[in-house]
Amino acid sequence: MQAKLETRRSVRRCAVTGALGLALLGTGLPAANAANAANAANAATTAYSAAVRDAGSGLSGFYDQKIKWSACEGTEMPKDLQCGKVTVPVDYARPEGRTLDIALARYRATGHSRGSVLLNFGGPGGSGVNELAVGGKEFMHLTNGYDVVTFDPRGVGRSSPVSCGPATLKIMEATDSDEGTADPDEALKRLRDAAAECVKYSGPVLPHIGTVDAARDMDVMRRALGDDRLNYLGFSYGTRLGAVYAAQFPDKVGRMVLDGVDTLTEPLTEQGLAGARGQQTALDNFLDWCVEDVACPFGQDARSARDQVVRLVGSLDSDPVPSAFGEPFTGQDMVGAIGQALYSRELWPSLERALAQLLEAGDTGGLESFSSGGVTFPVRAPAPEDKGGAGLTAEEDVPMDNLPAALMAINCADDPDRPTAAQVTASLGRLRARYEEASPVFGRYRLTQVLMCYGRPKGTDYIRDEVKDLDTAKMLLVGTRGDPATPYRWTTETADRLGPSAVVLDNRGEGHTGYASSECVHRKVDDFLLYGSLPPDGSSCGPESAGEGSR
Image (cartoon, rainbow, N blue to C red; front, top):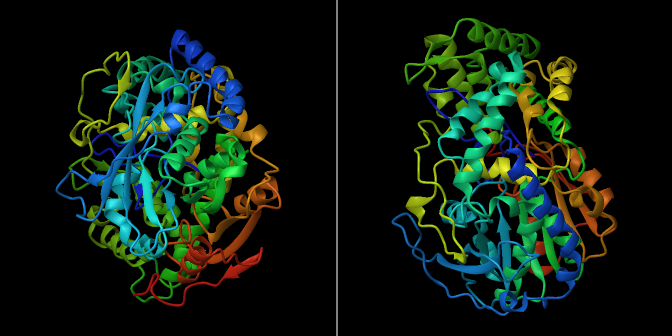
């Protein structure tokens, strides 16, 4: 599931909260490169099934490799975190061709290890290695039985990172909610023009990026880690990755948990609507909580508070206030900041104070703190034309725009829908009404999702057509009722789609995903991963009574 990136020119914000990043942008490839990428993607999808079942045909060397672990480099890296790599083919249909290295990190098991559990924190586009280094304490209980391992997927972080170079800012501006919908023809033209830069700066991995190939990489990791089956914990986008792996390698699925379950079938325009509805529900829940406090800046009536927020957004769009960076702070800037704060109920008290600062003193600093402000994207040299293998990229050489560039590339590689320019333009009015009905606050902000993937080659049909009716070991799917990004219905719909292997845990709480916010979910997931104790299908965890949103 994708969430929108902030596009204000003075501060480019990455919509990634904690370990669970979600984002949305759109771009386009020039016609010649689009055709080449489409042919490569179709060839890989067609050829994958036979290769998946047989590690031969040039793949045996990849499956026979061993990982060399050593201390992670970098001043911020924990001393007990180890780093390594595996080598995979850029194109699985041509394993004798170019290769790339996938960056890995692990915490060793504290006692007897039964193998590894592989983590994906979501995104797509976030570095798993960096996330484990920063947030690893959430997973230390799993080291009672496992080496806890994560990775930077292909095109991400140190694993041949993609980039759009100086065109990234042009792309973000073209997908701005004002510019993109006011003149869609101009926005689409700018996206097409910028796309050539993405090709030039990304290198040969770009036509072979996406979840189908990333799942293939995970099976190489499984074998290199010495595991007969893949034990896996995936969040948000990571649930899509886990489901695709299970479809490709059903007999290699070990204990698999999918938390914050992504859709496997809905087009991006419908995902945007679901995101708008989810964020509106989360905002309504926040305001219900806020008005119980005498310090709530909107008073003590929830209905009045909702109306005030809508009016405040409109007022700031018409008459922005100065931001901490001296640029206008608009209603859409406020909407973006609120959206980030709603990903975790623990942030509700801070959001209440930030809104009070804005209303009482015109101070935008509190709201701006919810975004990773100050990000700019310096120009780097185009990716070199390598003829052989691409090793790990040095941390300091990972381009600043890798996150949005990877998000665009991966999400579009996974999506087969390609509306024409005429269809995009003709549909905007109808979609605008649907988005604003879904959320009077977030609808406009999310509307430019219709520009996603315009001009790119057609993505794979595999996820929609083949990831269903799986014959695997039991998998635990966790859905959170108050999730603003991945609505609970996606959990039940995906469970129905995957078949009897899927077991649903209903988390009746707030925030995006349940493992980090609910002690009950955390305990049930760990019990399954460590001991194989699976909760009954349809069982639930109640709302946390303390610790979340407490004043």
